[in-house]
Length: 184
Image (cartoon, rainbow, N blue to C red):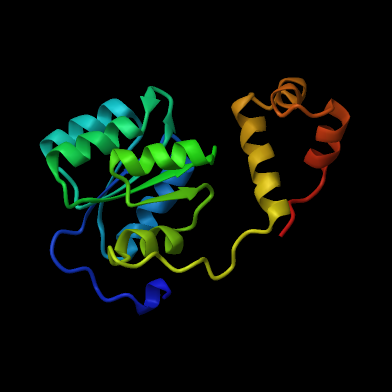
């Protein structure tokens, strides 16, 4: 089911987005506004929890790792204030253990970054008894690997040696990967 086949949102359409990646947060906020959500976009655990206490959202998209802490703290705050909220956890560091922790904290789904607005909307609006459909055009394994390398490279302030060390990769191999165009 694509976002074009979803019925219009009825009732409370408040959506909280908490992500410390400003360009991603801005793009996602605009995309979700265009899909009928009333979006509030914040960048920290502290801001997210304060907003949830004032105005619990019906929907939320929370990044797992934020500069000031763990996004699961925001998920738990949402669950304490509004049990019926549909919460999606996003992360660039996908692992089974973190997926289980997100679901235990109250998330209805767990998506790996970079997720697009259609995938996020489908996960937010999927009926409880049904899993969201798989993405129409999922990224290739090569593209996922490339995205992960790029993210770690940016987190290491574009330091090739530090990135290679953290990825447990030879520096020259990393330089060759970074010099190539992104895979499709």
